[in-house]
Amino acid sequence: MSEWIGAEERPLEGERAMVATKSGAVLIACFLDNSASQFPWTGWRFEGMHPANDKITHWMPLPEPPRKEGE
Image 1 (cartoon, helix red, strand yellow):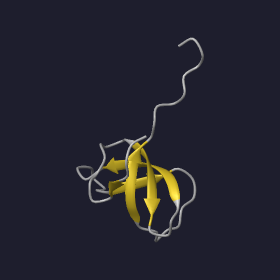
Image 2 (image 1 turned 180 degrees about the vertical axis):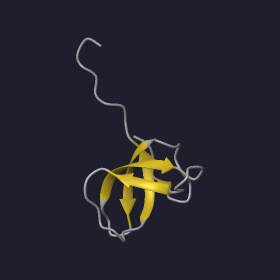
Image 3 (image 1 turned 90 degrees about the vertical axis):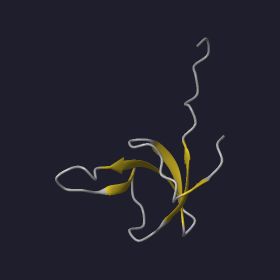
Image 4 (image 1 turned 135 degrees about the vertical axis):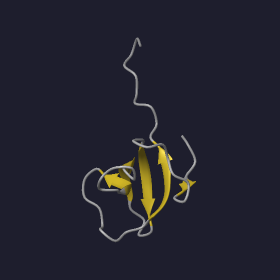
């Protein structure tokens, strides 16, 4: 498993990751960089619910999914 990476270091655009927040929550999110679009926005897009004002402190890449027997 990977080590936690500080939030100031951004993952690749579109990369799904496990993120840790200031409140201690651990969530799955995807990093998006739409800064060149008509409606610029850069940040994390969460899968499911999350506290609106909870700051991300760290992230790590998701591990590879398990393989089926015989693969």
